[in-house]
Length: 101
Image 1 (cartoon, helix red, strand yellow):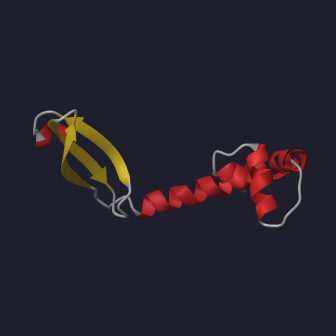
Image 2 (tube, rainbow, N blue to C red; image 1 turned 60 degrees about the vertical axis):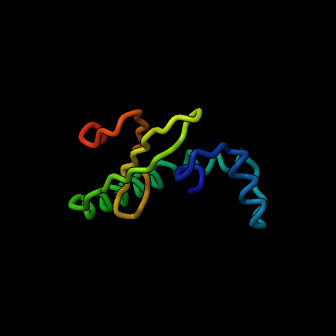
């Protein structure tokens, strides 16, 4: 599941499982991926689609922050979703809210 859910290599998954006390080789992880990977991927995709449909009515807001880049003032615009996750960032020299939106 780790290999499907996160962008990890087979050896990274092997190391993560080793830290949790599970001794497997990367070949075993590869075998499991070939056998069960489509099932896990379709389940993740299905859950993600359900969450997107549930939050389709949610709105995001734009956050404005002043930052200095090389000693000059710039405007950092961040679009954040309902949970506070940053969706997009834009840095501009001029304050132009319609362009940022």
